[in-house]
Image (cartoon, rainbow, N blue to C red):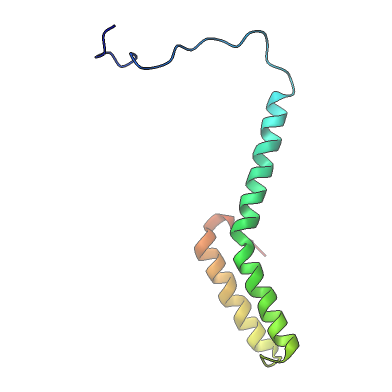
Length: 92
């Protein structure tokens, strides 16, 4: 065996026996969609938690109930979400 050739360590590719099931591409796309959705939910979780914490603090009276303060908080949090997640951030 010649160890200097680029394919010396590559495994030999053998075709799978028989045709692939017709549902395999659909299953692959479904699994990919589910993984993408799960990762997006995980990436957005800190921002959702911050919104929930702000709402709880307002309801309990720790933060003054103000539409202007709420607007400023949401703008800042939306900006942070856009900067952090880029094209995966929510668009309103």
